Image (tube, rainbow, N blue to C red; front, side, top):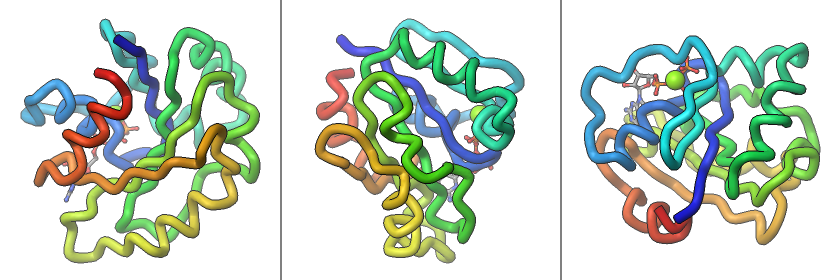
Length: 144
Ligand SMILES: Nc1nc2c(ncn2[C@@H]2O[C@H](COP(=O)(O)OP(=O)(O)OP(=O)(O)O)[C@@H](O)[C@H]2O)c(=O)[nH]1
Ligand SMILES: [Mg+2]
């Protein structure tokens, strides 16, 4: 069993992905603090959006096997600085979420993740936490 941590913009869908991996997406609330679960670490979007909090994210990442960089497919904005994938300890994986959304643009999201320089094989998964697309594959890949 592995441990995963999610980072990404405010409202990107990080908590909803974790809830979907647990099997229940009801009542997902805005994340206020770093939340430690048995196999998961959820982080508030504000932490990656404000360099002042990078240190907290980096030290927390020491405790996990996989860091999931979450990009909202409906957003044309990246909150990740170039090369950040290499800065984080642990294996990094890109996640494009909300692929079910009518305004989703998966190719644009792929482009936005490109400059992170993800570690390892640079794997990117396309998921919908609400519709369920790609979740089973992600679960298997992350050994959850
Ligand atoms: N259509 C669609 N909406 C989604 C999906 N995942 C999340 N959302 C919506 O996006 C909004 C934000 O989701 P959260 O999971 O709370 O986002 P977050 O990244 O945890 O945000 P912070 O806790 O503020 O950092 C919610 O209204 C979700 O219902 C998805 O796969 N598809
Ligand atoms: Mg959250």
